[in-house]
Image (cartoon, rainbow, N blue to C red; front, side):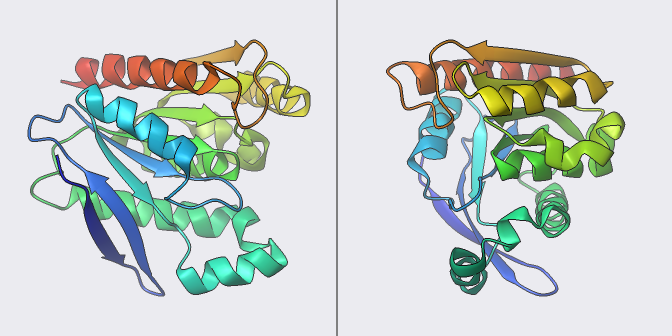
Length: 217
């Protein structure tokens, strides 16, 4: 299975993503990375690899252009522009839904940090078109006004030592009205760098997506 670079033209920017799509894919997971990261994030690529081995297609997408990323490195403003990230994630989703090879696939979102906020906001807008969402160390508090409108089955994963983010996720969890689950991984910090922590994230994500994609079929 070869990785393909895709360029998705939006009104104001051409976005780049890395697509892995097995011939018998049971669904497609779009990754929204976190603040200061990119589609080359080793953590998201690790999770994507596990999802691919589980028979799922993955798209690691940069929701900011290279020029915008350079600006963000200085200002750190665009990574918190959840409205912008949400609009672009929705556009990318619709772009893939309009393509012959991916249009019939169930779609899910995997969001990390601020990317999780964009994933939740986008799923609120896209409704049942997004089957499932997984948040890794996410900032769902940044999607507070959209949480009650989320209809996608949502899994929140947080590290046991990531105390401020646990509080944010617990508050967000209470606002979600969809099918939902929150898992705290003992001993893990925000980046899940501890031995076995990221493997557990990937396992949980794969199980969540597979079960909900299978139900969609």
